Length: 257
Image (cartoon, rainbow, N blue to C red; front, side, top):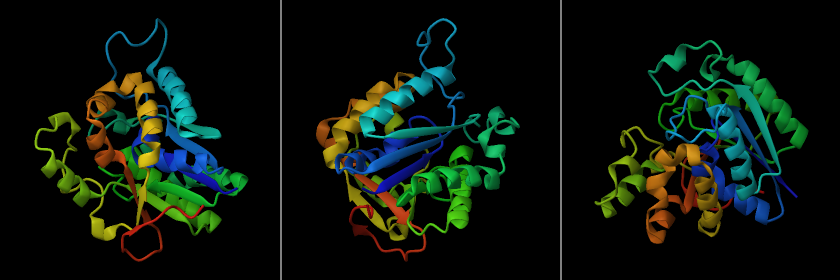
């Protein structure tokens, strides 16, 4: 049995970028560990969703538990940092926000979990955090520090294939506007910088189930859940990574578990 450890910024981020490799790893008999940095408390959510006295942070923790079960995680570690909000918002200045934590401190905490679990593969984000979200950028910084501490040599930066996304959107001219990323020229990484493409189409049912469970994030997931099956497969049937320390050159293979 090998151990896959995926480090994410907010509850729900795990679904988009690593939900398929998590479910596939679990189905193959490997241990899957999910580490989530923040409470997701600055997200938007539908009116009337929360029960009396229920906070958004508490709701998103419940949703995270559902997602973890759907995706096969054996352990969920929440680091408890505050959500920083989107780039340019007031939350960025909160001293308790994850983006303002010392990445060396966060990296040391992550390294402890990596060493406890004897993780074989670790996933973080690329240096832009996919689209510039300060919490995602912090995941990268802290993950790189954990890599230095542990000397781990199988660290993968989960990202989006920018060129694949452009091709996909060109084939789907009627896609809803809210499905489109904010800036295709800076979203994710170009295909030339990626190293690993993993076919996770067999895990689409689990990814969809995890999406459905995030009722607080229906504004993000809703339009995607309405896509026809073939469109959903095209959008989410491959997960993309750049292995740190490996020269660019895209290969279709699985993570080394």
